[in-house]
Amino acid sequence: MVHIEDHSDDNDIASGNNSNSNSRLLGGTASGDEIDVDLLPPNKSEGADELIDRETEADAIGDGDGEDDESEPVLTWQELRSKLLRGDASEKSPEAIFLRLFEDRYEIESPVTALSNIKTFLGEYLIQEFNHKDFCSRAGLASEKIIDDDELWQKFADDHLAQHLAVAATLMLRIAMTIAKAFHLQAEDWRDVNQACGKAVRSLPACYKLQRKLPGALNDARALRFLPMPTVDGGEDLNPWKSEVGKELFERAHNVDWNTIEALTISDSKPSCCFSGKFTITEVVASDEFTSVHLAALEEGDPPGAFPTRRLKKGEPILWEVDSSFGKTLEAGFLIDADWYQMESQVCFISALMTVTPSWVS
Image 1 (spheres, rainbow, N blue to C red):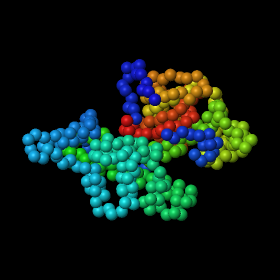
Image 2 (cartoon, rainbow, N blue to C red):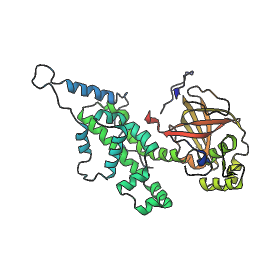
Image 3 (cartoon, rainbow, N blue to C red):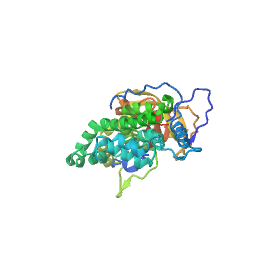
Image 4 (cartoon, rainbow, N blue to C red):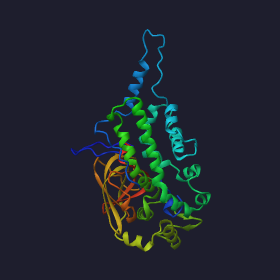
């Protein structure tokens, strides 16, 4: 993916992998309050670079004519780890499991690598890769009965996801604060990490759910109607636009009446162009029938094909329609990376979603 060249005089827009298969389109398987920790002034952050400079200075202490030219590090990762889990003897506690996931995913061996990966862990790993069910099983937060029953698990997950992700955000904040104190970092040196930890409590649960539920019934129906894709299984066409069996499968998968989909798409026309890229949401307009999402281009990717390619300029707007149920979850500032098709009405739909992330990830 490449950054789109900015041809406008407008102010820059703030920038910030789950591919959707045909089985999902055909019906196959496929939040809390913000922590009030944003106490830092709005200065530009040096992040981990400042920490590297300070560690270099610490390493230089003792160089010269002294007998001991090697200085002890201000704080090792193992020492920091012990501080975080002090008084918690169980490696199966939620905090310990999140810490191990963080260490394993980003090969954390020093405070530098820890501080530089906090935002990525929160805004990418916990949204795209985190296995909530496995986490709850390892931590003993849900019984085997709940884990093994899809309906019971879904209710449990809906009730507890925000709480569990808040534990991760709080842990990352403690890591950042401990490092900042040990290395005497200035407030502006880790302002971005501090803000991300606070905002994560609200945005992570929303993005986690959107990553797994988008693009939704309306977009799937449009993709199945206009895009060339195999929908025949065992000699039977399962496309809901072509068979009754397909309609039933679609209705069960999306919990929607097919007549509603037909009514919403009655004026649709085939796509006039396609494009791929990352967009920032600028406005969300919810209604009883569907949700209109206004977005602006940030980065351009490789177009999905089948229709003429549209080249985009940075900041160029598009209009996207999604199910009404997403109206309360999508927020201005969220970043959507996907393959898009634009109909003659200028309305776009997604054929394949890559990522949903908060704006503070970038």
